[in-house]
Image (cartoon, rainbow, N blue to C red; front, side, top):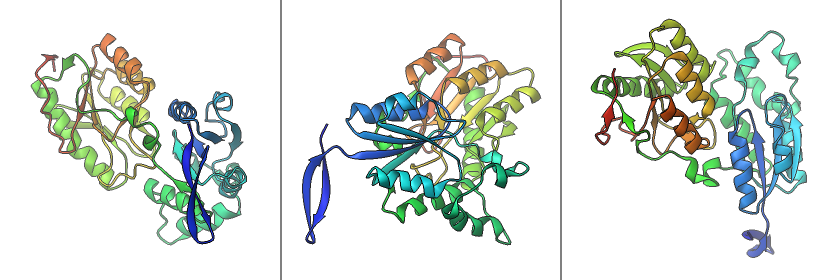
Length: 311
């Protein structure tokens, strides 16, 4: 598909039809594959940098060009995109932030000069700031210095954003609805503080909250603490969610983890949560009698009447 792309000539904007190159920063998981395939279906040229040791090797077969990059190679990543004429980019997939806190992290993830220049002040400051939003905002600001604009991946595949409603045939019981509403309030506060996006509750008692370890470990911890299962997982967007990064994402692994640990309900935020391979994920939920709902931003569990489950 040809794309109108502006070129500035003698102070005026002229438009020509061209295949716009798009850059992709790919982390762990299936979501980068979904984005890469969608971009190719729309006839974009896709130049992908895969996080070494985490991104899928399948990306090399989908994209026009693919290279591995270390997590802290900011300058090298910018040069790669500039070399291929990339002015618009997007990012998808999980990044192993926890590795930044392991012994000898600096040597294992040796940063290049641009990474040092951008992030050293955050790390070395008297009150260092390694919050997710801070790190990712600074990263995209460094790319912007070279004219590379990052856009939300959902701009290219809006269909992956989950719609409001009850997504499985079985709906939550009254007790589970109360857990959903309570969990929503807690999760939104976690997001406001930029701690995490997920909370696990049962009978309005908080079993686990997500921090740097991620959603899957949060769910596993809840399963260890609540051997009887039957808990509710609530995952929401941050109140001031930047849709360019860290958008709540659900995939098959998340569902399998909830089932394995004894969870009964998954509640997410409609219009702000991505479900990767949604039909496959919801089919898995149905087979295991897991309840999945997507709520509006007010967190009210006003869903259609349906077959309820035992609490």
